[in-house]
Each structure stands twice: as C-alpha cells, then as structure tokens.
Length: 482
Ligand code: GLU
Image (cartoon, rainbow, N blue to C red; front, side, top):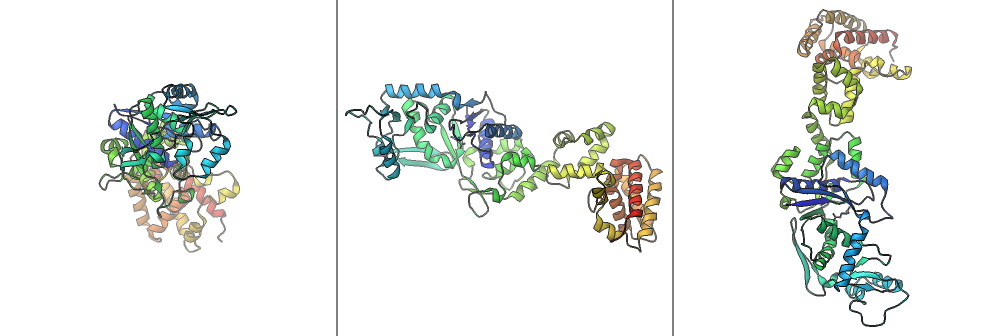
C-alpha cells in the first residue's frame, strides 16, 4: 500500500510551498487508495513555537486534507531514536566520536573535499580515547562508490560517497539529529513514497545511509521543485506569498488555493479549474513538473471566483457566517438563493462577498449609526451627477411614483420586477430611463454598480424598497449640492 506523509517543522507559518507538498502527498496516497500521514518535526527546540504548531494544524484543517492515524510528534520519540543509535553502536555501524570543539571548528571552517575524512578520526580508532570529552555518536557512511537513487520527478541523482561525512546521529547531550530521526520515522511509519521540496535533496543520501545501516527499505523519493515568482526568483512576501491562513483571511476558498497550488507544478492539458475529485483522477506523481513553477497570484483570484460560482447555498452560508443571512433564510429561501447567486458572479473572494451581501441587506441610510458616516452612505459623486438642479425634481417625482407603483405589484418574481422597473423607466417621458435607473440604484444600494435591480427589489421586498426610497428622498431634501 502506498503511504505518504507530510512532515512540517513548527518553526513558522505553513506557507504555500508546504501546502503544495502536502497536497501532492495527499493526492498520491488517496489516488492509490493508500494512506496519508502527518508528522510534526519538532526536534529543534530553539526554533519551535507553540503558535507555529497551532497555526500549521489550523491551516491543515482549513485545507481539509484529511490524514490517517494520530499525528506523530518527534519530540515524544527521543527514546526510540536513542535505542536505534544503540543498535548501530552494538553492530559497529556507528561509533563514539571524541572530536574536541576546536577540532570541530576546524572541520567546519575547512569545508573542502577532506571534510568527510576529517570527521572520521574516531572511526575504528585504536588509540587512546580522550577522557575529558563527552562523545557524540557518528554513523559509518560508506567510504567508496556512490549513493544514488531514482527520483520520481528528476530521475537518477547520485552523490559521491566521499562527499558524505560520518554525520552525527546523537549529539553529546544524547539528543538525536535531524536526518537520523527523519529516516527512522519514515521507515517505522511504513512510508513507501516520500514527496518533499527539492531543498531536501542534499539530506537524502544521509537518510539513505541510515536506512541501509538499519536494514530498512528505502522509499521512493519525489523531490518537488520550488515555487518562484514571475521573474524566476525565490518567492517572497513582496510577490504576494502569504501564509496559508492569511489566504483564508483574504477570502480565498481552500479548494481554490489547492487548485492553484495543484497547477503550480502540474499540468493536465489546458485544464485550469479542478475540483478535488478531478485532481485525484488525473494526478500521477511521476508527472510533477521537474522545473520550478512561477507563481501568478491574479490567477489565484480568478480560480477563486470560479470556485465561488460552484458553491452551493448551504456551504456558502456556512462560509460567509453572517447572522443576517440566517435570518433571511428563515424568512425566504428563494430570496436567499437569489441573493447568493447574484453576488456569486460578481466577486472573486469571500470578503467582498460578505461586503456585497451586507450592502444589499442593509439600507444605505441604516448602514452606520454614526451621523457622519450615515451622510456618506450614498455615493456623493453619483448623487451630484444625477441630482442636478435640472433633474432633481423630475427624479424625485419619478422615485416617489415608483414607490407607489411597486406596492401594487407585491409578491413578484425577480424577472417580473426587472420588467416592471424597465417599463416604468421607459414610460417616463421627461427623463432618460438610464438616469432613473441610476437614481433608483443610488436610493436602494447607495452606490454605482452592484446586482441587478429586479433581483435587489425581490430580495429586499417591496416594503423595504419603498422605505429605502423614502429615506433617500428625505436625505435628498436636506442634501446641499457641493
Ligand atoms: N520538516 C521538513 C520541513 O519542514 C520536511 C522534511 C521532509 O519532508 O523530509 O521542511
């Protein structure tokens, strides 16, 4: 059975690169009826933080990539790693190293081809062992030949054994090191296929040394190229790269972010919009692009608008989480449904969705109780443009008679209201229909643009329509032209 994992370190936010690795690992497992596991690599006590861990778990939950089995925390498994180190010592595959701090410093400063050799001073050492040094434990890496593996994305990757040092597996304080614990955990969790960022390629030969020393089966590796900006440079915050949770705050849907990340590094013909089912259907880890992918965030917003359009009402209400909508649902499901479908086609994120919904459900005059803001609830530029001395009276009278006209047409449909408004506007003899329509829009929504007016009247109802017109005319009577 194919088993994959995602293994974040809780040293910072979960970024989009990490989420893409998680997604590909998830897809590879699920598409093959396998298992997908989550492991927290929290051995770096100095750099770990609780907030980072919570953030990662929350982002993961939001992205809805379900994983199997309880989450593994490396910090709780020190004794397991120590036991394996002991086994290696007993089988002479590892040894105690008594290099002094000064010697280690020299090795660090002389990173040349002799480096690996210098680390091996105490390998099969026959001389006198220093007594004043607390030893670390080093693993015996092969002295000759190559360490190579077939990467599922990049093909064969080889390292000369002479470049791989006898690296430390247990520090002198008894704490295990990164490559040692990663290899042990992957092996014990039965990871068969290991997908991760290509910044980990240089760790792979070391992990292979551990697998071989412990007689574990080596998994198949897939090293995924980085995500870069449109200039081909490392992606940064300046390019719009945010942590996963910041995308949530920006009103991005998890399915849109996953779709976006899926396409950054994977293609399936010209297709751009993918549901999770579609991603699962077409994903093959071998087909992950082997070149870095350039990130274009305007595409994310376009994908988001596409995914917003296909959300059903129930999920949308849940995501918008507005008590106002709950009330409207109780009152009339069909009005809620029209409201959602009208706004759906106009926005590319959930924040604007909320804003638009609230702007429809609250009369401009009621939007803010603060008097100053109340005054500005109507778009001033539009007001000045429409209600010129020449047109003010005609428009005021037209709106007044429209308010009466609408009453006799109560209980209408969106389409009928639309016809009614159009016909009413067309029948006005002394003003262009478009000017009336704009003034009605200003009275009902307070601004230029927005949803279809027929839909608006249907959603808010004829009574509220009348009230909004009345309040607007009242406001207008006190309004002084600039
Ligand atoms: N913990 C590593 C990271 O956050 C991932 C290690 C791995 O996937 O092997 O980059």
